[in-house]
Length: 483
Image 1 (cartoon, one colour):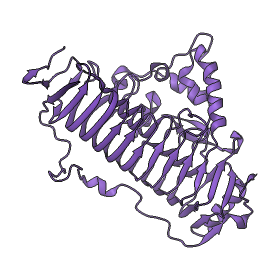
Image 2 (cartoon, rainbow, N blue to C red; image 1 turned 180 degrees about the horizontal axis):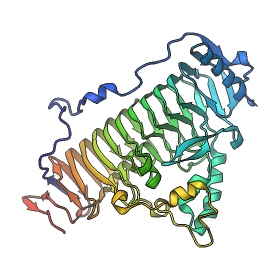
Image 3 (spheres, rainbow, N blue to C red; image 1 turned 135 degrees about the horizontal axis):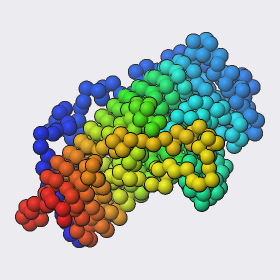
Image 4 (spheres, one colour; image 1 turned 45 degrees about the vertical axis):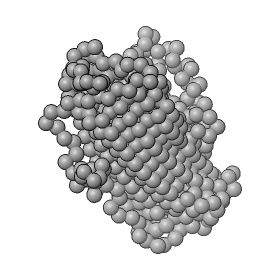
């Protein structure tokens, strides 16, 4: 086992002006503003039983539940709640000043008929387009909540199977890049264009697509939530929590097991995302756990509107594929910056720290195969095919702090892949220990500062085209140039 202590030099940069020597968690003024600033206060109760809802897992209850919600809105707000039971439903839409309360002993199960999910204008995986609504939706609302210790079960396997069938058909045709958008699948919960929203205590199982999508919204609190998607197999694109071009978001005390990114920050993709140009910013994620999944914290791959001002701390990951992951593509653009990650423990995580500017090319780059005409394809295909100027399409990762991190039993400790036109700048490592089979690589890094970075692998770390990067073995050796 070879231990490398990497000491890197940073010039005139300090990300954390509010950090105390006694407390490794920084305090920025904006952190006081994250999360919902209000909560529905009306104590009027609207029980869906009184509107004809039946919790027998057989009767379709969409109309009855929605009527209870609408009446509560008309009366100025209230608590919409359930008797114990299993309620089959399609898309539901929560209104202003509503606490949609799912008590213990109650389960909402999603219809497996796509026609029961209303088509809406939304953003899916970075692209604005028509798509089915989620099972539970808060769209264009203020001061609303989803609470209780009950369960929302998406019953999504039928949509997973549909996707894999389409993928097997699309890939041989050179259409891997569009199948995710052509295969419509309902999300679990969608919060879109809304403000002062709370999700507290809910258990969410097996959505057809992303679990909880926070889109174009501000001041949202998510706490005490359990998301578990690996039921009846591993669903494609069943992310845990996706925070998408939103601001002042708080996620805390939540647990996610899924088959894709666990906690994920996004901001649009390619030409469409660059036009929308809405950042994901002022985010706090704390006291959370990630089990099975593609990444504890992932920034990207949808980076077009930029991701910035993020603090994540007191996190644990076990057996996720990636730990702290930054990914984009060369047609995506945007800047990921001012990220502070602290007090994070990773066990059995294959790739604890990873930066990839050329992620998943068959998905990330769109080319219309021979035999197709651009005049005859759907509108969302045309959006995906729109070319991006290379100057706008080159993403940038910079100003990221890794503080008090440990990773054990990794496959590759660190993977940093910058390029000549987009170096990975101003990373700070403090008290970081990574242990695994392979040390990994650092390419095109610039102006790094490391007070204590220990990489314990069975081989030497590969260093290429780095500037102002130094390694320390028994004595300080300058490794600033290509190795």
